[in-house]
Amino acid sequence: MIFANPTYLYLLLLLIPLIGWYIWKLRKSQASLQISSSQAFSLSGATSYKIYLRHLPFILRMTAIAFLIFVLARPQSTNSWQNSSTEGIDIMLAMDISSSMLAQDLKPDRLEAAKDVAASFINGRPNDNIGLVVFSGESFTQCPLTTDHTVLLNLFKDIKSGMINDGTAIGLGLANAVSRIKDSQAISKVIILLTDGSNNMGEIAPVTAADIAQAFGVRIYTIGVGTKGVAPYPFQTAFGIQYQNIPVEIDESALKQIAATTGGQYFRATDNASLKSVYDEIDQMEKTKISVQEFSKKQEEYKEWALLIFVLLLLEFLLRNTLLRNIP
Image (cartoon, rainbow, N blue to C red; front, top):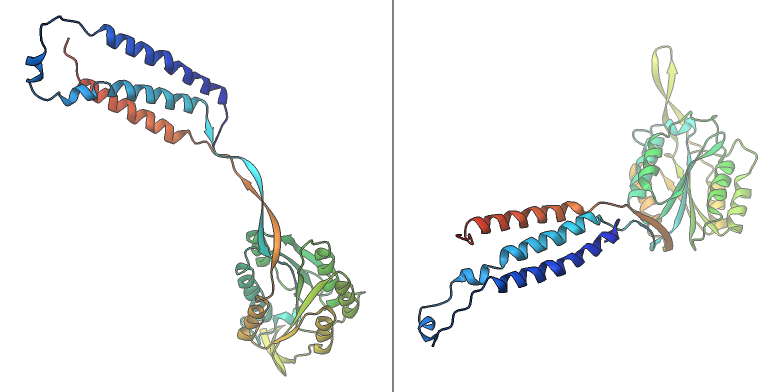
């Protein structure tokens, strides 16, 4: 606890003369009487409990004054930045949002299933720096590396197919993710690449992006999303949405090569359950210490002291006017 006005604490010195005045007044008020013997008084019975309580009102008043000075000094909780170390790794999620991610072999569709499972993965790793890159025909960073997962999850909700030009630029999305994580100081730097197609756009080949990631010590886990064979895809027609089966074409050889180049692993997710198991397996990866800077907000703490002052003064008033009342 700190005080916003610590100079007011010097007022506590005023309690010394007040206590001295009370002791002096107490002695002056005691009359003296010379008697031959006090033996008769010693047989009169036990001393009344009021004798022991007669100083209590003064003690209550002095305590209330001391607490009032504390209130004037404005006690506050600590306001400071604090660095702490926690266990975690740095992870960039690179997610395909091309139109083919609307296929419904996963429920409700590939994109929504990928968002739901990734959100659960994020919630299960509260100490990690996690960021998000999305791509289709081009790529952009939806969220840089952060430990503020509330912000990250809110940005996840805004992801939808059609945000950017359609296509599948895997190499461009991967290169964007690498640029966001390459300067991280963490020992373990990981990219989780999720796609349902093969690279057909962009100036950077996926294998070239993998070589760049390997040079910066970034490990890539690749996930191919989609059932084997054909999958129902929604088409807009004059009669509304019509579903038609389209072939599932995932460039598994390229995804396996990307993972192998960087020391990662390739996974195939054919339904919601297998996609979840992929993230569960990645969740078992090693961890390393990261530094987190936390801010402690300043708060006024005078309310408890003010309540104590009121209780003490009320108790003193009741004692002086009831149990310890003086008769003139």
